[in-house]
Length: 176
Image (cartoon, rainbow, N blue to C red; front, side, top):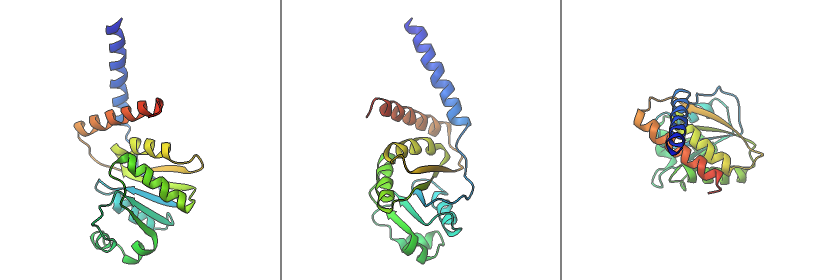
């Protein structure tokens, strides 16, 4: 009985991992949203957000998880973006240190501005857990759309992220 239960759980975990690894979230089209939220930590994320903001896909952008020592002028220079864009339309979020605190920081930022739609930008392998955390923190009236930055994650990275995702799902189910 215990062996069968363990086998079923293991099979479910393996099938879930196959789904997680094969069907990674994809980039979104340029449809407009009220805001863009970029989670720091991966290549191409800020570039994607800046390109969409410059194309008029949103009014404002939050970059969540920025180090306290980074100044807007430095980011503008690094990403070859107009400094005016940073002064008018980009907020550097400096409170977040992990995915859960990204969600809290993002929720507070969105609530202060009363936005109804937000585009979440993060790496494809990180999107499901980020979206889960953000959906739990956001009020139901806010529509969240996912815009994944494609990457080439290692098997180890996918395994680690899948297990984190499962743990957060279980924690959410039991109210943690």
